Image (cartoon, rainbow, N blue to C red; front, side):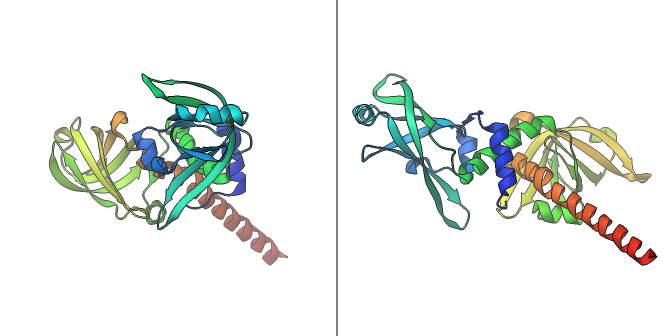
Length: 285
C-alpha cells in the first residue's frame, strides 16, 4: 500500500478521531504492531506494556503497577512508545506524549494495572494512517459491502492479484474457474458446469496476491448461477462469503482499491476527457 496524502490523513483523523481500535489477534497481524517493543516511559524509567486499544486521542494499556509512584512524582505524564513492522524495512518506531487519567486492577493480578492514557498532542501521521486504514475498512465493509470490482487486466494489476484463473473447491472437489468480480462479501466466477449441481453448495475460493504475498481461502456458499453469453456449458456462479470467516487482510485490499486506486482511475479518466474536449475546441478554432 502506498503512502497516503496529507489530505487523506486529515480526512481519516476527522472521521475517526474518537473511535477506539481494539488490538485483537487479527488486528495485531494486519497492523504489524510489535507488542514486545511497546513501552511507557515515565520519569526516566521505561516499563514494558501491552496496548489493548487506541484511538487518535488516547490508548488503554496494561503494565506493571510499579509505575504508580513514578506517575505520582511526574504529574501522570508519560511517553508511550509504538512499534510496527514495515515490509522490507526497519521497524517503524515513534512516541507520543500522554497523561494517565485513570487506572484499574488487571484482573486478579495485583502487580498489573490497566491505564487510560490521553494523548496531549495529535499523534504522528503514521499512527493515523495505520489505525485509520483499519477503521475505514471496517466502516466501508458495511457501507460499501456490495460495491463490486470487475476483474479487468487493469484491476488485476492494481489489486496485485496474481491471476484471475483461480481454483475453487465446491463440496471439497477442486475446479478451475475465471474470476469475474469481487466485493467485500462475495465474488462471481465463470466456470463449466450445470447450475443445479453447483448452486447452494459449500465453496472455498482460493485467491493469491502479491506485494505483500498473501493467500486467502474464502469460505462461502454458491447462491446463484447464470448462463454466460448463451452458452450452456458455461455459467457465472455467485459465491457469498461466510461473513465470520472473511480475513481482515482481504477486506483491507478491497478497501484500498475502492478508496484510493478506483478514485485515482476516475480522476485520470476525467482529466483525459477534459483534455480531449479542450483539444477538440482548439482544433475547431
